[in-house]
Length: 612
Image 1 (cartoon, helix red, strand yellow):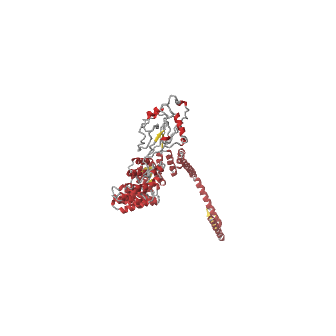
Image 2 (cartoon, rainbow, N blue to C red):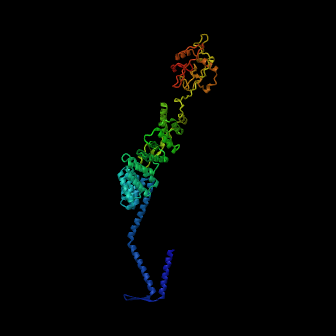
Image 3 (cartoon, rainbow, N blue to C red):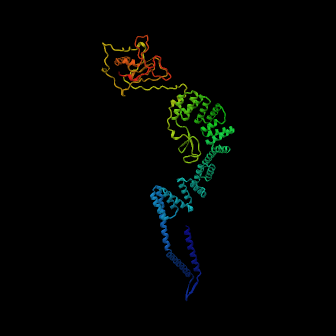
């Protein structure tokens, strides 16, 4: 629209000029070299304009002819530039695709056509890095230092290469140079912060953190937390040399981050040592409300030196009320109760933690409780054994490293404030003891030795029966058969089905009990314990007493009495004339002396056969 208005304005001005000349006629006479030219003013004006146009056209033609060589050169340079940028574009694509051969080839083409362009230098450096040629990469980055637009990029590349070859001094120099030339560089500020923290220069690290916060390179909350961590590290380092400086740094760190456990613990203990008990208690309680930690609990219990165990128990109770049902508070209360010899309170405190699966610290506290209350070495060993299989408690974890103490910087990655108080991930799937077994140990009446009945092996010829009264017992077979009526040999009898497992010498399968019945008998054929406490197998209950007598008579061999007498001494004589069944010893608990009727004998397994 503007151009149209401009054209209309020009045409209007020409029209107005033509009209003005037409209204004012006149003559123009030119006398040159004997020639006289006379014409009107309008024609003369038109001639002047035409002459000017011809002159301009001639000058343009002359310039075109004279500028043909430079024009050809410019076109060549343009073509080369276009080909160079095309090579750079393809080289960047090859680097992104991870093709070092193609990237190197396109870098050579870019150098040939584009020369020392910034993108060409960048392509050469990245292609050299991709192919592993560190020397060529450093040469390309050093070349970038000669140009202002690529100087910072060259410093970044040289910094990376210096770190790769382990030259931290050179890397720090490049980072310092980059910060001096461009203070807002995030990578350079982060690198300087890492260098300061790795060297333990906490004041310089705090300066770097403040500069990053001022340049808005870090969040304000993160910068505040980092300042608190650096102050805590400075306080821990200066505690032995400069206690006043350490206390001031710890208090400032707690003000910036009340939940920072190392700073709060150090400040509380130092205030306690100075005698400022009230301020120490308030500081530790505030930190405990933010986050629970065993170090805070220990500092809170020891806030007044020389207190009795009851005073410590009272403070542990107060601490547990600040965070109800918190595991750390429960553990602190249980430990204080054990030291105060309030064992019932300790058991009540530990019961919820045992119900959820006892951790290592809980098992160790239970072992300490059993030793302090009962002196039971068996239970102590049991809890110590459970501690080896229990899930681990929370610890300081950073970059896969588990540490018992807090550190401001991770020794693995060098990252500031990397340690977190949490359960190590590798132990989350650890085996935990059964819930019923753990809860059973809270009862004082639980016996130290638990007898568990093992299922007996199935034996077809074994018959288990309860010992009847003396009047109802079947008569025992005679020691030797009569000559007139010999017993049939065992081989003539139809043998019972053989067991599925290989034949072994039978072993009495007896359920050990704490207090056995004194009236205990044993089947003379099968060698199985009988008595009031013996539990018959479900499969053998349908067998009647008559079948038992028949099977017993069919299995008697003339050699059986001799074997029985060789294994056991004869029982003491009794007034009853009927023969008594042979009494064998019964397995019992270690603390039970055994029945009075069964004299201690040595069992000989090799001379007993199930089927004769």
